[in-house]
Length: 182
Image (cartoon, rainbow, N blue to C red; front, side):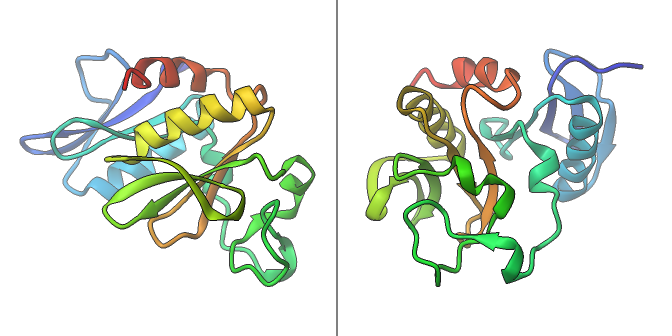
């Protein structure tokens, strides 16, 4: 069966469900949220669709339209490149294969205190948001306008994924349009 809709991880009274966008029935149920996310990530990767993660209140939390990249194993320092303006000794690990696309205009989505920030060159905070999803929508739109990339990071600051408009899955545009009504 070919899946053409995004995979959503949503809460239920009995745990967590993975289901297609606008689907009424769950593809699979899980007790643990992390297990549901891993399953959705595999489906998204296999079917070249996005993974959309909701929080415990069913609100949009995060999306990943590049699950193959974020599923890459942790890299050794030799496989890393500094992210655009970052110094060589930066702890940030960006796969070298993406380095030629990076620039000072890139939009980084990083956890800052209790909020998610969109950060540009020199750690300048462009805007902050209460959740990662809205920060990602803003960063993607800004990256598209500036001919740059959006880099997302885990809560601890480590690199997670990169999307460089107009490259990347066009499905990200659907998600950005849906969730960028801020």
